[in-house]
Image (cartoon, rainbow, N blue to C red; front, side, top):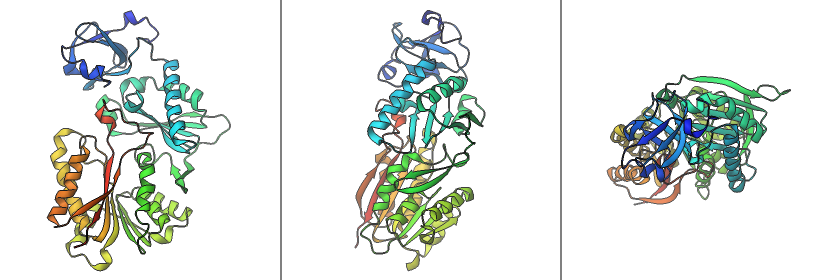
Length: 411
C-alpha cells in the first residue's frame, strides 16, 4: 500500500488493553503479543497506523508479519513516510552531530531507534556514506532513503553493508552493493580519514558493522591517556579488531602494545594503519583466539608477560536474554585470566556492547573475578557511547555500550 494514500485507508493495528503505555513513552516496537486485532491484513513492509484499545492514535510505522517485532513505529503524526519525511529526519540528525561533534570527518549520522528511525543505520566516512537496513520496511524504502541522503548530505558515494545477522530476523538476505556514485568519481574501496589526530585508512567493504567501531571513537582517546604518567608502559589490547585502542595507546607513549584478534583481515588493516602513523615499531599484532591466548599466558605468568594496561573489548557475548548467564560466565573468565597478567598498580579497561547486560551486572562480573584473584580494584574511569549514538531512556535497547577502567591496588 502506498504511503501517499489517505491515513483513513491505512490498515490499523489495535493494541490490547494495558499494552500502550510503553509505546506512549516512546518505544517504537509493537510485538505480536501486544496486538488485539488488525482491521485488514497489511502487506509485509507496508505502512500501518497503531491505536490503543480505546482507538486513540499512537503512530505510524512499517509492518512485518514474519518478525517478532510486528510494527516499527517511525512517527507519532499521521504522515506519509516518504522522501520528505526522511529528508527532515536526516536534517535533524545532522544538526545534532554538527552541534556536538563539529566538523569531525567520521561519525554515525543515523543510529536507528536513537534517531527515531528503527531499522536504519547510516555512517559517514568523509564524503562516503555506509548504510544498513535491518528491517523489512526500511529495506523496501531503500531507494527513497538513498535519494534523501543524496539531497541532504551530497556524498560522493553511498554503499550498503547489509550483511548483519539482524537482517535474518526480518526475513532479509545478506547483501552488499553500491547505491549511489556521484558522476565523475571513482568507486572508493578505501578511504582515509582522521580520528583523534591519527590517520586511518578505512576499508569500506570490509570489517564488522559498517567498517569500524565508531562508537568507541572517544573511548579510544580516553583509554590511550591512561598510559600517560607510566614509565614505558606495556599494553595488551585484546580483541583489537583494526587496532583502535592499540594505536591510540602507542601514540600516547606505550613502549610496546600486544594486540590480538582472530581476524587476519582486520589485523592486516591495523598493521597498515600503524605504519601509516609511524607506530609500527611499537605494536605487535597477534593472530589468535583471545581466550586461548589468555589461558596459556595466565597459567604461570612470567615477568615479561605482565602488562601495565590491559584492554578487553570483545564482541557481544549474548544476543538475547536467555543467554545472559552464559555470557556473564564468559566475562568473568576473561576478566579472571586477564587480571593475572596485570601488574600491581596496573589498569584494566573492560567493555561490554550488549544491551541485555546492564552496567551494574557487567561490573559485578569484574568484581567477582577480582575477588577470586584476592584483589581490590579502584574504578578510575567510566565509559559509554558518544553523542552520535544517541540514548533514548524510554528505549533501553539504545543504551548498549558500557565500560569501566580499574586500577589494581598494590598490596
